[in-house]
Length: 335
Image (cartoon, rainbow, N blue to C red; front, side, top):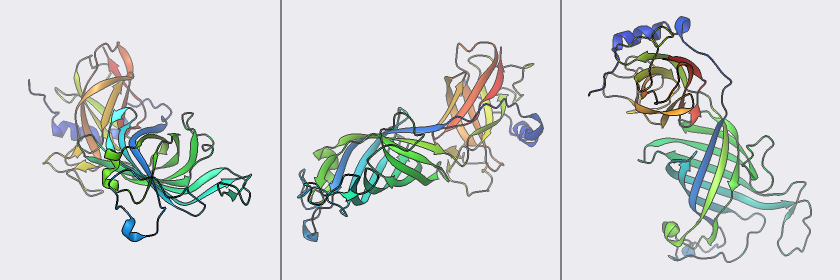
């Protein structure tokens, strides 16, 4: 059976009366935590100064010498999942310079270190470019700070080291702030004479970063309607388990094809949300049928979903997430 999309004129009418009629029971905004898993991490030590020897070896090459203060290094990691969901992408970490800060550093030690009141490794810059499993770009996150040592105060409990400030992002993560640290710091150490094209062949290590984001925008549900006639879901006209509904929301991020900021979504082709869009009803995942920009509006999206089976009657919670950024809870009626 062909799924029926709501009549556009009725949906437009609901948008015009958002302020007076929106059905929102707000709860505290949930924290946005990205648990990013990486594989095949190789840390390339900048250990040689003969330009002709850089990336000249096909096999796995160990550094000529250990890191010393004021030396630099570069990690390359494959992103494989975010919050347990498959993903793709790259995670680059650059330490420049390595300092080896220690309160007990002394001249003449076997491993030279710099004296300081804290224990840290390097000044580090991190760049994460995250893709959907099909290669669709979601966005980037940038962070900087110090690696090694204790995590930042207030970090998620899974973080065991590194103290990074999230400085911004692009795409679905435009304007984000926050803090980050590693839950697992794994890497294989290599010389920059090793050719990075063979990184996956030569092998690397798993790596994991936990990012506590403060997004500039969150998904926010405006309205929920029945898909058959675009009438509002209310206590008088409740939804049922297994029914297909359509919600209107803002804050779902970029689309493909792209629409310039502030411009209206076109009548066609459909502007499909770039990011993974998820809907939960009473904490249970709902099947999302489509998530598109609502044509003729600027920044309003349509998300079609099916109410999960086994949802009890009454007012139930509904939440939408885009790129793992969860919006505030609203309530809808189920019979």
